[in-house]
Length: 246
Image (cartoon, rainbow, N blue to C red; front, side):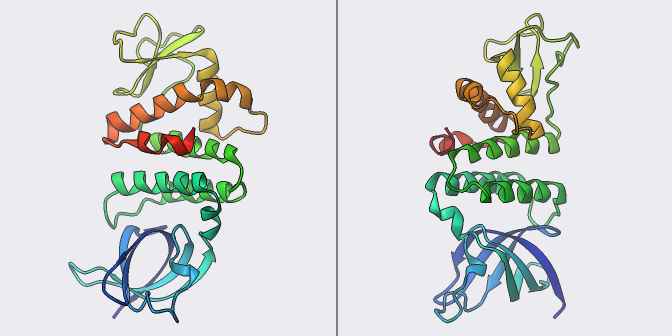
């Protein structure tokens, strides 16, 4: 049977029978796939390679039509165990994979998104016990929207092109920022200059001189921008994770 090598993150494991598991893997070059691991539940084979959020290199047997990949061997690259040391961090990582499994089709490569995820996880790994690691979740969420084609202009109105003055209004359905004159819906989210500036910095990942106090004051409305965007464009409810983000 033909074999294939790949690297990816495990984000779900389902017991298949008394000894085996089916793991869900976000692979660098294969996208989201399912892999049958025979004997994974045997005590003598239990290892970190199959732990949640572990980054692992795999050798897999390529499936026939209608079948799933089958496991041959693996090498652990980075363990996911450390993320369990902080319950908030664990659920923040979980949120990213929930979103990806909700928007990405099976077996379709998504290398740009994988690179974004890999970069974000690597950053969070350095700050597992630090609550400020949530900034990288915001970074991930904004940049995933950009990759999917939803990129608001933070400087000019998305309808008339005028430069913003002090306030703007965010439309989740259109994923654009509108000036006061172009805003026609009471459901749009009002943003002040500080919120817009923070969103711009978060999207770029500019945290070296980041004003944490200003972020705390505007965090709720920035989260509302994100949650409404994912609800309107992907029909995903990320608010169920809000207690672990805020």
